[in-house]
Length: 561
Ligand code: 9MR
Image 1 (cartoon, helix red, strand yellow):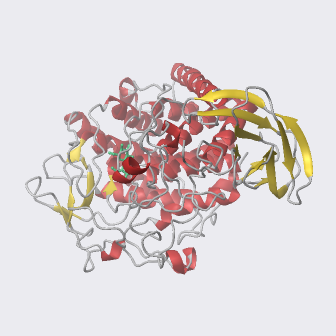
Image 2 (cartoon, helix red, strand yellow):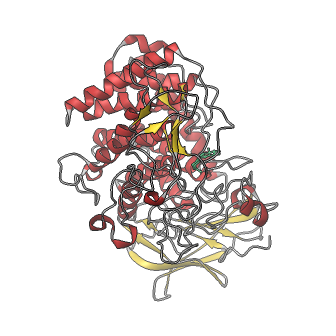
Image 3 (tube, protein in one colour):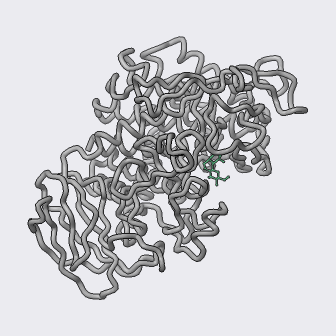
């Protein structure tokens, strides 16, 4: 209580698809249905009905009703949903509500590229910036980065890639997942015939017009970096991947990449990073084959070398304490990473030796940078013709079972979140998007409309139909996040700087309150309300590549549906 979340009538603040589900969630203590009205932009009532009482929503602590106006299909803008004197934020009804988000959520990756100027011709003056971390003073990276003292004797050129998040570190474990999600979006669009997603020129990026889908071009920017993180031949742990590269100390907010004077170091290789590199590189070999055979071959060689190195060093873990100047991305269970890498290698090569390592299964726990076991089933489901039938049938059954569970999560909560838990983790928005990706995969497997509706409803949750009346996507919605934690677009601290670009996903509610601003402002919060749109709340309000990749994936799905 106490906080003002605006109207109790919660809608998708961007808009609903004409042929999609259209529901609002209403905070209302009454235990019997109440009347609602749908109004057009002139205030005229175009439809009326009564709510269904959904009841107490544990995640938000709200008592919630649902208004269903799904059979209203007239395109327009400025609609509102009214219950008594309460009126929702305005929203649209349109045939293609996700066209813009599909582009913007993917364009995000160009804006976080390291080692190249971000050109005003593509992004406008506000977001243009000089190249960061090319060893030009005051930068000390990334063209010749030494290992942390005492860990190795060489330096590597690890320029390029994407900045992880609000910090300007670059991490292999989650960077590989983000690159994988973009390549997976490509493979999905190809197999379902979503040609619009494959357009060369979809984005405003330097590679537009090169006859390669932009989504692949963007993933390559990261994959090239991942390959550079491999320990070279002739060194100890050859073939392993350095876990990460980042500043010695956390830099102040704001700090533009080109102004970062911190020394940067390579941190010791880890088995998890090595396997995630193997997975992304094996997939790279597959998807680049038709466009650039030399690059595809380079990726395949790197994937195989990484796999062998991981087998030789199966339990080298990144320390959880190594979190000064950059995140730890620690993980001490890598059976799931072995499984994911083996799956991608098998899908690309058909070499049966990988089959026995494919032990990962999708469960209702979903997936994340730390838990990649589910990706085994998802890749099998995506590319069934590449796997033995018994594997395909098992994966299919499990994906559908988990997707059904996620649909039940939507239907059993006051707000349509496919993620349901007593605690909300760091990056809970990506739990929503990753679970929506699983539901979308179930749609691809069955074409059952209920799955497609559930993905669109997950979008409703992200775009305002939630306990906070908050869109977690910058630039999308009347009450959208604008002050995400970050050093580049720190408008909250310096009005001359822009806010984060449209289409970036805030980490979202995190009930563990892991930063001082969250601790100070959100004591006692219900899990789904533990969020604050403040630049210093890195544990609830950061953007990150592995979250935006997931958003871009489902935005592409939604735009195509
Ligand atoms: O996404 C990561 C989340 O799962 C962890 O709980 C959290 C704390 O270790 O770190 C998150 O990743 C951050 C990384 O460590 C540093 N760059 C910003 C990332 C997003 O907040």
